[in-house]
Length: 241
Ligand SMILES: C[S@@+](CC[C@H](N)C(=O)[O-])C[C@H]1O[C@@H](n2cnc3c(N)ncnc32)[C@H](O)[C@@H]1O
Image (cartoon, rainbow, N blue to C red):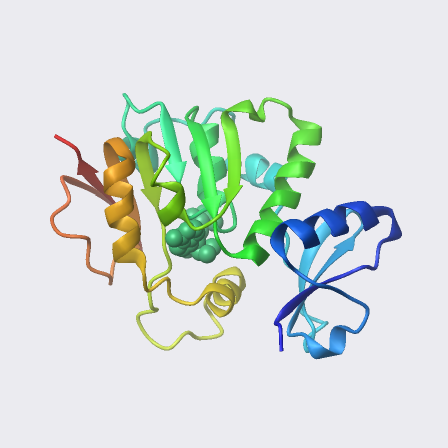
């Protein structure tokens, strides 16, 4: 059984559904019953629906809403994330784009951002989020997105900084209290158990530094040069001396 399919509910988006289906090799179906997840358009927005729990809120990526939530544009470079990325950094590869939250924050701080994501479900949502965002704001020239495994992307791309935010196993068994977007992502992508390899590729590709985000219960990669810690998570900085 293939776990996710595109459901063609919105006739106006037929062409776009066809493009996503071919680009990401996600089948289009009329029979949703045999899938766990369905990607479908609702009012022009691509959303992820749990087939067995249609009452649960569909998940989508709304970059405009994120931008409004983060507030002013550009964001202060005194934020812990900006301090970790560094003043002299101009370009950042966000190798683990996920829901696009950090990608958007980093871009709003004024960096050039090259985002990468390998999960086709996350990629489909992010492509749609970017497509809608660019209709509203065409200043997104400094922001690009590639669907592939970042380990291969980093072989022939470089940037001042490579930013990594892979999934880590939860501290305890995940409870219903964990944020739904995190629980769903864990179901979709697992625990990114190849994150050590990703770090090695990031180290090769970074001109100045690698920045990682990890929950405080997880170990850093070796000895970071700086750590900007928060209550639940930390940014570790590894400088290329
Ligand atoms: C914790 S989430 C990232 C959340 C993201 N920083 C945000 O702000 O929404 C981890 C994401 O990294 C992606 N990922 C992990 N390893 C990857 C790799 N080698 N190449 C591309 N994407 C990867 C996973 O598919 C997942 O979507």
